[in-house]
Length: 411
Image 1 (cartoon, rainbow, N blue to C red):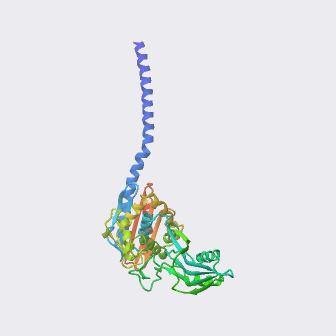
Image 2: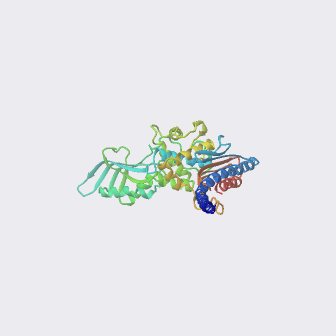
Image 3: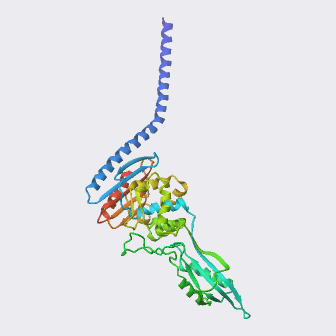
């Protein structure tokens, strides 16, 4: 009996030790699985809390005298997080530049150039005294490059000197064929605004170039009947890329840069680069989103026009398309203002959770305030968002709504 007693004691000790080992191993497995479970739970909980907070923000907006639309899309989970009036057509102001920029990056690419070209044509006549006369014409073809400057045309003088020319019989002419219509104001622009110039010869003047040529010691005699052939020299005297123009267009919300971008995009059309041609190019990118063209009515590239209308979900569709395209995303993201750091968001959200997180395009014209872009939620998900307010007499109140939305989405 004693012998069996000790057997049972030893068995019980071994069984107890094995039970403890099993419990220990189970606790390790549970420990490593717990963060994954907790993370999933917290993401779901955060979504619910954020939606509740956005509902409260929407009620606050509804109590205001102006109309507000909100749309938030989770790009990581590819799902709509929140929408309020997001299917309504609204004036977008300068967040329309997102559509212009994304369409240009989609169809042209970041390295596509704005080129200011010079063509020297005619014949070179050398006399016995060592003087050379160019009997022909110099033509400067503009591209509405907002970064070109008059000094960039000095290369024309350098070329004439290299050819030994000391007299020009003909003249210097401007080629505006990049945009064949003669309109200088966009449709729906207010006459008393500080409007951009729709001129291919933006920032440059052939009259000033002729004066510079004379000051360089080269005589210029105007003659409109000089030959335009043969071509003696054809070269680019200034070139800036889409990406270079994009920086000021987005960071500083420069309307001239946006209209220049729109016209460069329109030059791809087989037409005269009219408003219809330019909008037609935008339609090509719209066709690649999941939104119908009835969700947008575009008349310019900057958002100045009174005829511009978009739905918040159309802006989201463009942001989603851009984010999913590496070529577009890599150029667009660095161009967007960063909250509390630079551009038109430099002085906003400095002390909130949106600082250095929110990358977004601002929009402000009379009675319109908007904000649209990207941010990272506490769950690690990337969100695209847009908020548009129409009918506000002052921008301060809707901007507070914008900042509150970003705070909800980043904490």
